[in-house]
Image (cartoon, rainbow, N blue to C red):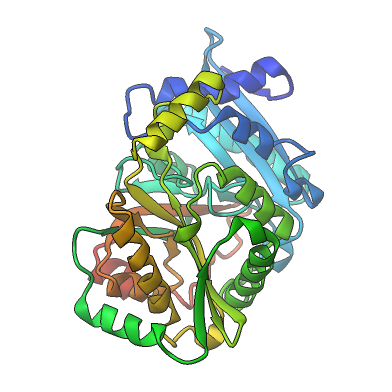
Length: 400
């Protein structure tokens, strides 16, 4: 068994093909598109190469069969705000074998150490945290768009190596055939009619305006909450919008304004994984036609929240309920949507957890983001541990 860097077309194809073999009998897994994985590691396309670097490896056994893969990367902008210089690892896949997994982790660790890093956070993305982020530990249901899915033994592979819990990511589901709590809609309707407040949904004809508003809201909302906050890069957002344009429903992306100033946004997408699961990660001409057929048949019945933000000054104003009120009108016109998967919320954000619970949503999935400190003498710190309310995250809701 030996490890091989991904430097040629053959090894890159092995990196891409391995999940197809690993999950071939797991109907909940959706193979990511080869093209999107390639773009994540393309220096000309991924803007994170402007302030970071990434490398990939595969592991092959004595029969020259791929049995594992991993990527390691760093972001020099993000690590400046952390208490320890931490790079990342991600795109991890492995057979159920500690020897294979540990070889992958050791290789990623050595590369990060060579570049001056003191820790490794993973599994995460070499890019924004709306995709390829976290190890699934609870809720092995069909994979939603943007969310990671892995086999149940991955948790043991990470934790037996020495990774420790950095934070939990909770996903909540909302069944649309069940009524919202009556009190929620009363508040939402009142908020919706308050003077000075207005709501509009995304319009592709004015993309630049909405990109500016999203960046303004996101950076204002998340900076006080995240210790290692990295401002949203407009170039990354344009790239994300480009990727999701074929599946986007503009009426599922809403913005709130107060006296015409942007104060909140909620971004939902149709869960195209309900179609992508049939395409095996390939987007050739035939699959493009198949995609259009499935889409026309209204195969997509789920919506997933991708991102959200509320300017701190308005976080207790109920503006979130006002946006849900707008969404309610849309869903009533489009009854083929049956379920929301709300964007994941960290265990360090009890306000958003409380909002999700107020809608009647239920906890459906938990992902773990781990961190491994290279020096065991370095004190380990949970992400924003002073904000984590364990009574909410564990006792009250029995979260994993």
